[in-house]
Length: 263
Image (cartoon, rainbow, N blue to C red; front, side):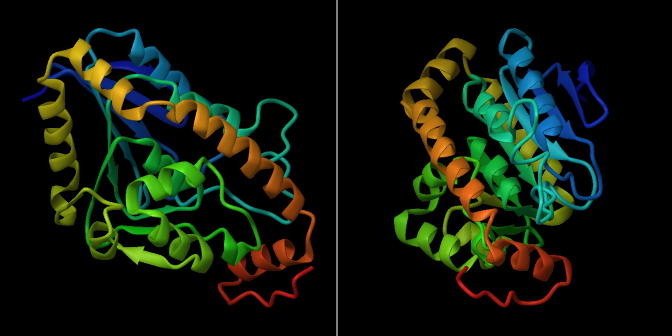
């Protein structure tokens, strides 16, 4: 049995490293683990701390509650997520791409919008038939973010990425696995165990080799993610001022189709 030792804890994120060299990094904002700058900051800070901790060789990214991450809380006049007084959500998100340890994400429930972006910031993803994944930005009258411009087509291909971004449609776990959005599909009760075992299998490899291979395989992803988020952020700021965005957020809250007018 793996002995766990706590290394990092905030109100929304906690991390424990086991004797299998896996750091279990857990989002603790149930039930939806809604994304905002504070949560992104806590995640990035934890991963940066793990970069300098030799006990950690691989990271298991998981969440408490029903959903991995149901995205950012949106309102027609959203300030905290998109125009905060301090660092923007994507400033912290970019820090995730700069870290060095391999990450396996256990995607329970929804990974929607920014939550999908977070799942795709990991190297590998495990889900279940009840997993739900969507890039639903266009249904909100909005532009996608979190560097999905780069990460989504890299995982599923350009055409599948266009389909998901244009339609905003939701995929279940089996559909997500079919197009490569999930790397492994398991029963709900096996999700945490399977993801942990996969992370432990990775962590059994030589740590310097792991980090070297990861750096090679990711190439200039950090630079491309930075440029993507710069553009995405500008487009989000522009579209946030439109009537369609206000209608999209209202429609989402009321669980109805949007009535968009193109203005």
